[in-house]
Image (cartoon, rainbow, N blue to C red; front, side):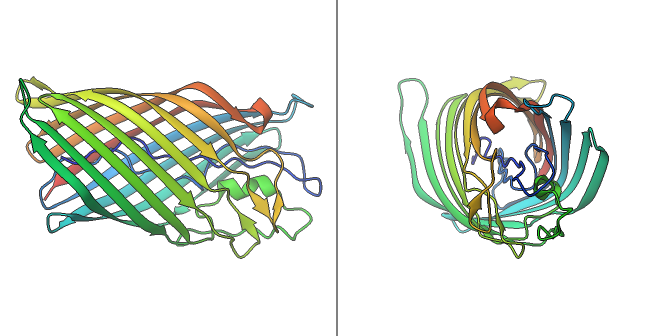
Length: 303
């Protein structure tokens, strides 16, 4: 069984002196891998992501922004032999920003990502009560600029914070992942790490690179013919500062430590799961931007 915890990295936008004053929450720069369902050959599924951030300008509390990011995503995977695995993520993004300037909404196809993973290690040894299964997967991939990105930052009326509310980033980026799982009986531990290297888009804007590290414990319970797996873990995320024409965008970048809680239901080839993250500690835009709620709901079918 191949599992992974949240690989989700944040990008935060703010203003520079030549633009109107606004700080935005996270949005278009995220990459989320998530828990992989159990499958022998291939799977296909749908996922729904929800995130809400709130920003209040410290120097002027009358300037605020409530940012809502929703994503409906088609994803799938296929095993290529015993050691290789290919994954595809195709998101459709729905963004809504409620601020002191009014309400702005946008939607559209997001950036499609393709990831290949290699099984570097897979061992199974006898334990005192149950066998111990251990796996190590290394992955690499690309995020393509398929999502709409139309923001002319050379326009004096443009707001650099709006870069976060686009359907895509306008850049082709590199994805690196690592996942280690340890299972014994019904108990399991998953550790994951990911790094996203972003490039400069046609507007001269570059979202900061993202790093994520997570660890989660889960336990499988047989309930009325189902396999029920609650999980609990921690997720650390770090985002480097964004840049426009090689200059650092003030207020961008930061980190967060989140408590993750999830539940998965498996019935034959059907997998249903959800995951929520609660902030334990976070620091973005000098404490002006706060994560309020975030979660994922997924449904997948093994083929």
